[in-house]
Length: 323
Image 1 (cartoon, rainbow, N blue to C red):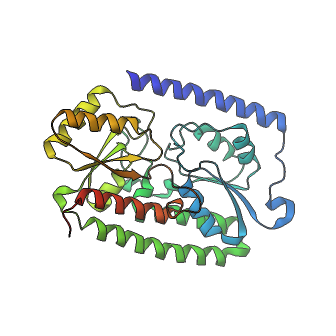
Image 2: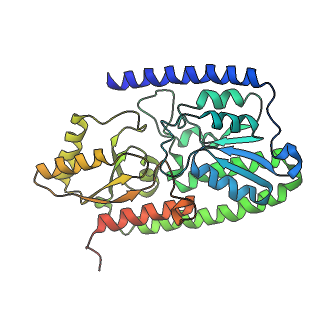
Image 3: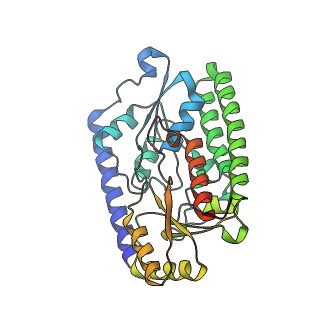
């Protein structure tokens, strides 16, 4: 019942935002000239989550100016566009976003803008046969595809192909940038597999604040359980905490993990519930799930974020077992 009320409130909010956006665009008329139209020769791009911002900057290189709307620690499931965001979207030459209903509060605005300019949901480039289901939405898939590095290759290709179509004069630069980065992602995927293999198969159980890691689990051999659902809008109840605490205590899972974009209190409550069952589970560290780290840090890039996550998970699950 609680989940249904949350979904109803979300949809009402989205409807109000779309009406407001329509009124705003009618009042403003034509958009202001973008950076590209103003004559500096660069494509003006707006992105949503940091993972999309990162690949767009890498593939676009010197030929693009990229504005990301969601920074470190921002939860895209519940992010509501500001007036400044709407203006930026209106003035962009191209918009890249994850899609698959990740940016739930913005999806109708993005689709409406997409009727007039390129607005590309990069994760929807993934073949539907490779997508995992989303229990809360029968017609939607789990949007967290970036946790399988080789699936995220599709997002890079979507950015590359869109830039080539928009700016054929610099096609070779976009291809070269994408090719170099795809090689880096292939090496990253191999690294994650190598690190995951250090953990015995029976110990590969990942418990996090919300159900964001199922693509990671499928790709790298982990059983994954989240306290909240795929969207952070579905709150964990007492029964959820009890059931997961029972599982952790029975299986003697050594560590559970917090996420940078999700409040820590639920994981701390889970840890306390496990303690009440006579078992001490550690908080194994902080993972980056729906947002990357701060700009200028290793975790502020997609590659750095993925490396941080697998290193943190493996270290916590192994504990002192490795010499």
